[in-house]
Image 1 (tube, rainbow, N blue to C red):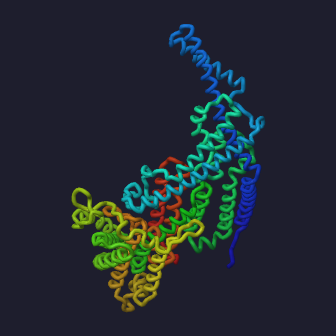
Image 2 (cartoon, rainbow, N blue to C red):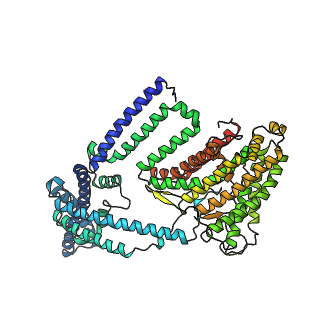
Length: 619
């Protein structure tokens, strides 16, 4: 393949590669130095300094308290009242703190003392805490798994008004978590290690009492091990508490991982610059930008200490659970009705199938297949009627499908309140009507996700979910290459030519519309089994826009689409959303920027997709 590269591209690539090489060398040096004696000693010295600083403040407080007690006794022996006591103690406190500073009480230089016994006690304490937090994390994960498997979780906080999920993680109430026997035993070991550390601290500060050291325990232990600790976290805690200047070597140690990962990102950027023209020709500018943004999010997740395997696993789950819904757009585009924004018609059919599955008490894979069959049957009927409507309104499909999709959702908001279902899982506890969110624990929750799932390098592969999505794609591929599928695609490409060759245009449009609606019914059932819940009322309203955005992002137009557009678009769309929120939360902790970013990303992609509604086929 011949690549046309300009001089500017070459110069830019060379500069980027040189910068990447420099950053990579410094980063690798820092990573190797972390495990060296000098690196370990640097962090240990900062921890020791912070501990002694904390203990020193306690020693100063003890000295001041002794001086205040002495002057209080003198004033009272002289017959002074409470006012005189307060004035005398206030004055002596200032003098005592100044005296303590002059005498060097509470201040210690590590080079002036023998730190070996103190360092040994510190290491014992850190090891004990590390083991305890590992057990605590294991126990909490077990509790969360059990909670998610048995509890009826309120998902209102996890979804926006459109019903699009804001997070793959369910909110778990940890108030019922109780320390295990092993945790209690390990905590005893932590307490014993702290007592040993206190004895070494008292060697440096004899004025400290056991009561003072116990009161200082939260502050002292705060600079040691924590759950999911990293070198960066240890370094930040230690340097903040010790208030020391570690110089360039310390900065390199702290930023080593960031520099190494940034070097990888720079290399990827250099390749993107070098192969810019063929990449743009093959992918298009939007997909190239979003693809690079996805790579950037992956690198930021690693830099910020997030679990990238977990996020990639969530991305795969989102790919499988949303893929079938996006696939339902393909036959609508191919048959000539453009983007099927009336997809909620099929979604309603799938929701009916799920409700009947719960009402009849079916579960497992049989319940899932039952819901699919019922959903397909209902959506086949409604799809034919919907297709007949679109045939009578040719030329206005985009507006009609949007109106129909919104209307059916609004109509069903009334219908859900009068449906004669009896299952307590679905009905409101008081009054008629169905719940907004219905759990699928007793039906078919995760039947595909858990089927043959396995883990690779920490990434959980939802084998069953991906296989089902692949099966749907394969069946759609076979249909589009059948005689009927080719005729349907011909109608979408050029209806006048298709009619001239004897193809019934209206019939093919109804077929494509019905097939799109039927696939959407299956898609919402797949989505629900993966999400763990069905959501009624306003939830399906925007799903058509999300699916349309994904397939257009993948490279489709409103007149041509392929299976590859479905897969690529869904992966990019869901991948950016999956990684964007946790990265934003890590960058600005305690803010609501992740929700803002999610809205900006999702709606920004929708806007881009809609601007492509008149674009030419780039197949």
